[in-house]
Image (cartoon, rainbow, N blue to C red; front, side, top):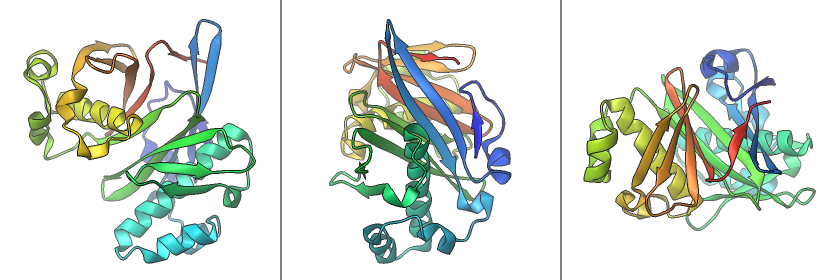
Length: 253
């Protein structure tokens, strides 16, 4: 396992080529309160790990679900996402038996955790194809402090289609390039996960009211969901976004 700080800017693909898993321990602080979370990246494609070696970390129910998936690509996506989620929760809880952590999907497709030793933890998952390789990322967090995560490919050939999900205000104030389009899409994906609406809602209701560019990330705020803010970070060919309570800031340690 390779651990890095939030400020890292190395290629995820190069880091995963030499490590089975990449982890970021992320703490968020507001006044005297701190919430810890854990972000993990995993790719069986990049690490060249056979799926049979990974199946031993799944429960019987997870294996049954895996076997019910017809597409090989969807099987790989499910397996990588679950393994990545287990790593993330294991890193946060300091509990290393991955097979004791079970990841399932709810009625809206949202992931949820069954983990008897640490029932207070929850998970959010993202998964993207980057340079023909499947890359999964997950963030584990305390249920008292809900979060969500999104991962996007900056080399998105269909970026201009995102404009249909933006308001005139967003187009006029925030869009100067295709990268800006992908950023706004990622931010809207993140809030759709934390509200559990997914792609069922009109993304225009997630109108972004403010975008602030910092040294190592970009912060976004919402017009109608003012209790949240997002952190977006460009990492090589990828864009990573997390969403959390607006009053909390990343603690750089």
